[in-house]
Image (cartoon, rainbow, N blue to C red; front, side, top):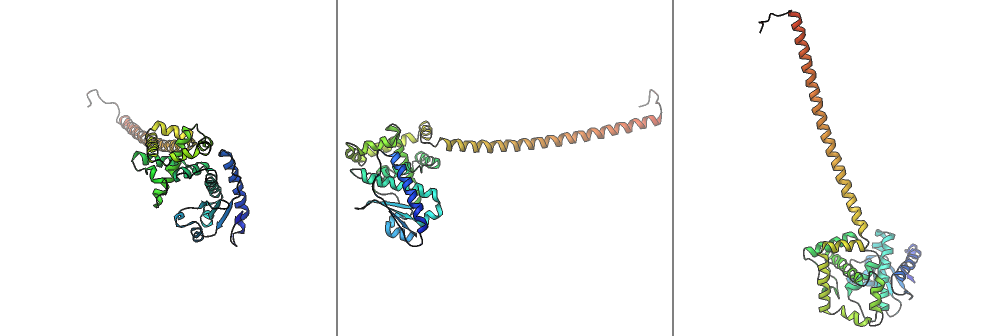
Length: 298
């Protein structure tokens, strides 16, 4: 069900079809299907969006709310009009992942876990995200994981890092569970799931996970394997291709400059040879005009 205000009618069919597509993505990635009825609210302006979602969503393009009725997703249409249709599709997958976890989990997850799962499900993790997290770990600027259990920082840059860290930690958990998001969630949503969720809130266990995660980031070998397994390998290949192209272009320009310098040198030598040849011919003509010289002529 899509709710909207007059003037946003053109959004309705597109939002409904993209919501159905997002549901299919969730059903493919999760342990079971998301079959509940969904309520989608299109807020025409940022002001309307914040009035419905709350001031904490200042930098969000959409939020998922847990209500007594159908799970509700509120869309900031003002932001998504500028971002384009692809961003809308990813946002819907992200928010439907929140709806799924809210419906299926027997206890609430820490925010870092939910956001990490949602970002991975929506395929929002980029090579730049992985690089930013790795650099934050090298320079010891990461946010303690226990600080991300309830809330994310209000500062936009630190908030972005919080999202990046969340998906990075969840990616580590996925790798430890066999490389499948479905397997990871199955351990938390099946039998004994409530106990496993409680472990994600345990400060001692979370600190141990945080230490293990940061240790993997400081290992360049592990970072390479992470990029390979997370689908970011081709981003690295593209970057290396661009660097190779730039180097080749620079090298070709360098060679052209060398050839031009060599050409100038050859031209100068040829001109000097011509001048020497002309002087010799003039000297020979003068000798012929003067006639033969005696042997003692100096």
